Length: 252
Ligand SMILES: Nc1ncnc2c1ncn2[C@@H]1O[C@H](COP(=O)(O)OP(=O)(O)OP(=O)(O)O)[C@@H](O)[C@H]1O
Ligand SMILES: [Mg+2]
Image: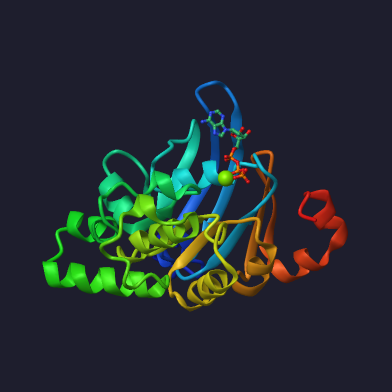
C-alpha cells in the first residue's frame, strides 16, 4: 500500500510525451494480385521533420505514401496520424491533415480550371470564398504558377501539371506533406524553386524521390526502402557519402 504512494520517478513516456505526428507500426501490404509491397515497415516522424524516402523502382515508396491518408489500408500493422489510427472513422480528419501529391499528376487534377483544382480542398473544408481565393493565390505563387488560374489542367505541360498538383495540397495547409516524386519533370528553375520551397515550408514531410541532389539539399533524414523493408533510416549526409552502402541499395 505504501508503495503506491511513492513518487513516480520514471513516468511512462506514453503519458508525458505527445504522440509522434506520424507512426507506422509493422505495416504490411500486398496488392490484390498477391504482390507483396510492404513487408513490415515501422517508422515515426515528428512535427516539422523532413524525411526523404528513397529506393529502387518497385521498392514500395508509393505504396507506403498511399497508406498515409488511407488510400491503401495495410494488410496488418497500423498507421497513426497524430496518434489516431487511420480508419473509416478518422479518414476525413486524416485527409485534411495529410496532403498527398501522387506520382502522376493526372491522378490529382480533375477540374476544368487550375483555380478549381487548387480551390477544391479549401472549398471541401467549408472555407469562405475570400479565404479560398487567398489560399489559391498563395499556393500557386509558391509553385511559380501564378496567372494560370483560368487554364485547363489537361492542357498544361507535365511539369506545369506537377506544380499545380503540389499547389492543390499546399492550399490545404496540412501538417504533413506526402509527396511522390515532386521534382520529376520540372525544369531546372522549377526544380530549384521546389527545393527552396520544401526547405522553407514548416510542415513535416515524407518525400519519395530518385533526386539524390535534392535529398542532399532539402532532407536531413533519409529512409531507404528495399523490397518493402526499411534498410536505412538516419541522417542523409553519411549515407550519401558511403559509396558501398549506396551501391548496395542501388542508389548509385
Ligand atoms: N496496382 C498494383 N498491383 C499489383 N502490384 C503493384 C501495384 N502497384 C505496385 N505494385 C507492386 O508493388 C511493389 C511496390 O511498388 P511501388 O509502386 O510502391 O514502388 P516504388 O518504390 O514507388 O517504385 P518507383 O520508384 O518506380 O516509383 C512493386 O513490386 C510493384 O510492382
Ligand atoms: Mg513510386
